[in-house]
Image (cartoon, rainbow, N blue to C red; front, side, top):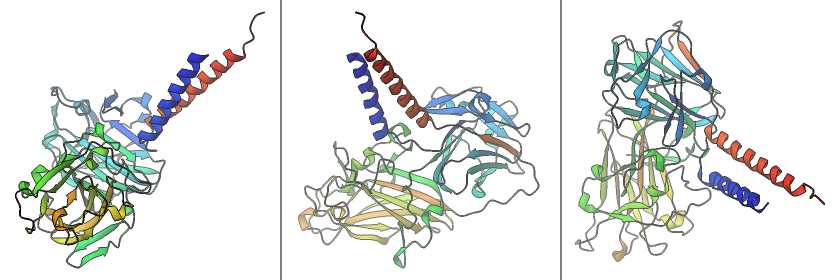
Length: 441
């Protein structure tokens, strides 16, 4: 009986850990395209989309499966197969939760049979929004989008160009984001007219991830992120490396209710930063830290999310600094302690919208505020995310017949949760039965 209690306690303990640490999206589609086998990548279960046992249904024609005959040893298993489309084709995914979703498309070209996937040229869209046109790749590429799904189906369509006549995809991820991941009225517009309210509902915008930067830190893989994102170091984007100095802490960030969460950015992003390098600089010299992030040249606006966490101050009220985007003031006299209830090491983020125009760069700068004391002049930045705002609408194919895949899958997290509950319940009843069993006289 005692051993039953110990085991039951251990199961419930694991259950509580699971609830406190795991992000379990209500919609969670992980598709290993062109394969009849499943794949485990970063502890995530990708279902082969040609396996009927996995509730993946395909119609005939217009697509074939291709397998890489010479896969590299360091290549992800997801990139050893691909589904190749010979005409306008689409996946249709049933959606349980209306709201913001992540869409990730994996492309890794190879040559097999009569197809050289490097020669593919195509467009792809999601629920009528054109995400990319004349798309082609020569190496492994991941395209990530954040978009609003406002009905109970998500259609992902691939349309080959006339010149290539085929398209392909290696893997697809679709999962729902937390409710507060994008806030409708939470962004400020920054430009020649100063700081203004962004006059469109941010949750309705389709965003394409361009940069995700762990400032002052190392590369983070999807395994280290509850939203399975990759973050890269900032060094290559610093305009003057000698102006910055890395700050680190070993203490876990103090997340506050209603503020940033691990789904906004992982612990490691908030545990490192770049700060002003004041060594060998006179106290009256004013300088800044600037990063230049390349973006496509053209008529585009970008959503910029900046992450902050004061890991450099000894007490609240010591750090005041300014933030600039493309040379325009985005936030003046930022005092992190005033927005985190005077708590240090508390994650905080701010959303902006900027217009990049023909510059081909989104520039981020920080410098000390005039409110800072002479001996405490400093400025910090922990993370940067830059996303292109996609605003094109895909044209309809008219009467053209399309190939459709309807995919129905359960959320792996829900399965784990249900399994833990059932196991705990069975163990409880077994132990209870042993306790009630009468002893022989």
